[in-house]
Image 1 (cartoon, helix red, strand yellow):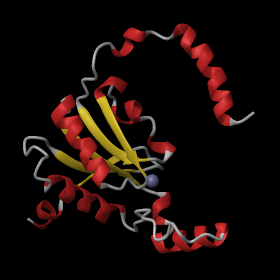
Image 2 (tube, protein in one colour):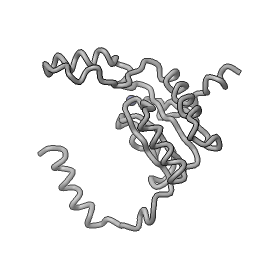
Image 3 (spheres, helix red, strand yellow):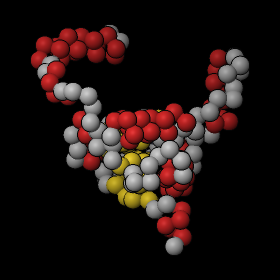
Length: 173
Ligand SMILES: [Zn+2]
C-alpha cells in the first residue's frame, strides 16, 4: 500500500475521535517559524516547548527565505498576529550537499528534458552564513514591522540544542 493510502486509512480512525474545538476560532499564532522541510525539524512543539496552535510554521528546503516566505511572514505577523519571527536552520542539511547547478544537470540528464532548467533549489553551504543572510533579508523588508523581533538559530540534529546566530551588524559590533 502506498504511504498516502495508508495515511487515508489512518485518517478514518483519526476523524472518529477528532475534536473540532481543539483549534477553535481563527488561528492566533504567537510565533512564526521558518524552518527546513527536513523531518527532523517537525517536532516544533517539542523542540520549542510551544503548543501547535501557537506556532505558524513556514517550511521550505534549507529553509530558503523566498518571496513566498516573506509574504507568509507578512500574513503571519500583520494579519494573524504572530509577535516574533524565528528563522530555524539546522546542521546536516541536505541542501548543503549539492548545488543548484548539480541538480539542474542531474534532473535534466535523468529525464532527458532540460526545459525546466535552470530551476532554483536554494542550495547553500554554510548554515551560519545562511542564517545571517536570512535575518538581514527579513529585517530589511519594509513591510515587516520593526516591532517584531527577527532572530536566527541553528538546530543541532545530534544534540537537539538550538544555538542563536547573531545578525551581521550585531556580530560586527
Ligand atoms: Zn534542511
